[in-house]
Image 1 (cartoon, rainbow, N blue to C red):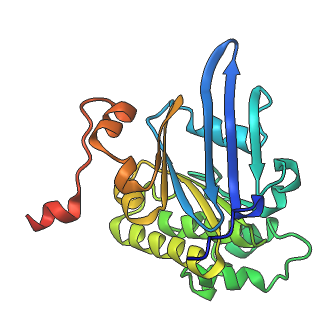
Image 2: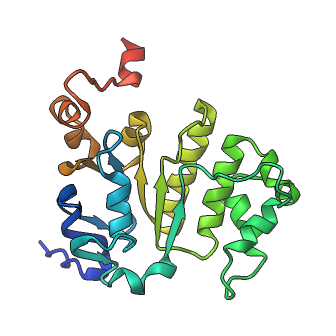
Length: 250
C-alpha cells in the first residue's frame, strides 16, 4: 500500500503554535495552537468576550502584544497580506453617501486586477450585473453581505476570513451564503476561516471547528468537536446544541 505524501508547509494554510495575547498582565488568548489545511473551511466559535477577534487580529499581525508562532501558507504574515481577503461582521457607513456598488468594489481592486473582474465577482456571489450601479446604502442586508464577499475575492485571495458572515440574514439568505462558501471551496480551493455563532451553519458547512474561550477548548470535525460537554464548556452549562434536521423528523 503506497504511503501518502507528507504535508509540506504550503499544504498548511494557517499554523499557530502557542499564540498568546496579554494586556496589562491579563491574558486574553492563552497558548492557542492549531493547523488548518489549504482549501479547508473552518469555524471559530465562542461566546462574546472569549477572544475570537483578538485571536484573528494577533494572527494577522495587527496586535503587537502577542507571542507565539504564526505562519500563513508557510510564511510570516507580512509576506502574505496580499493573499488574504477579509469580510467584516458589518460595514458602518452613511447610507446616504453617494457611492455605487461598482465604485465601492473598485476601492479594493489592486492595480494588477482588471476592472472587468468586478462584474465577474458579483456574478460569482449570485448578484445580477445591474447591481453594479446601485447605491451601496440602498442594498438589503443580504445583498450588502454578498457585495462584501465579492469585494474580498477581487484580488484572488488564498485565505478568506469572515467575521460573523450570516448575522442578520434570513433562512433563504443563509442557504445562498452556504452555497457561496461551497462554491469558493470547490471551484477556487479558497481556505476559509469564519467566526460564527450559527451552529446550523457550522455543523453543515465546515471541515473543522475551533472552540475558544480564552483557551482553545476543542479542535476537529463538527461531529467530534461539538459534543454536549464541549458546548457546555464553551458557552455555559445551560447551553444545548439542537439538531434541527433530526428534531424535525421526530
